[in-house]
Amino acid sequence: MGEIKSAAEIAREKIEKLGEITEEERLQWKFAPEGEKLAARYLKENCNLTSEIAKFDNKAKPIIIKGINDILLRNIGLPRNQAARTSTKKAMDGIKAIKNDKVAVENVFSKIRHILDHYTQQGEQQKKQAYEALKKEFEEKIQQALKQQTGVNARMKIDVEKQPQFVEEWQRLQSRLEGQYLTLLDEYKQELAAIN
Image 1 (cartoon, rainbow, N blue to C red):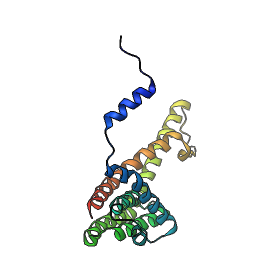
Image 2: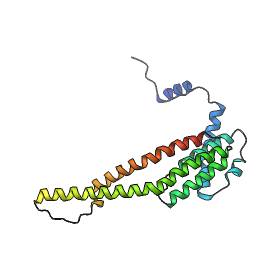
Image 3: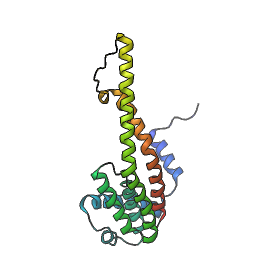
Image 4: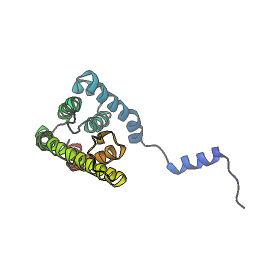
């Protein structure tokens, strides 16, 4: 049998295996959260990102910018409501402010705007049509089930929108419809992340 070790000994061995912490790792741990906090403050209070970034030294700036960028990219989403539209616009404005290659950023933004406009115009219409078709299908299934149970073709008014199966199926269908937009949006976000 082997030697039984305490939790402290096991932890010490794991730390030794990790090796020395590099200066880059220390900076990352210290400044990445600062960048994330700054992005959150910008989204809530509308602070000036460029002047806030200027307060940090040159070693910290790239890490701060990456932290800001990560949070702002997460806030670009489908325009499901006015709050989402506002958040996306503000996030895009913030990204443009912190990036050096404004032309490349604007090229990606035009693709993103195209997707968001399409979602607003055709996507919403598709969702409404799919919702009505699903609702009608569920109403017919319930009427058919009632007819089979009772033997009578009584057309009862049933609110299928409150049925858990309908809600579940609608959520699944909605996810599928929005998935196409989200996939493209994620690709464009990756393009933005790669721009300096």
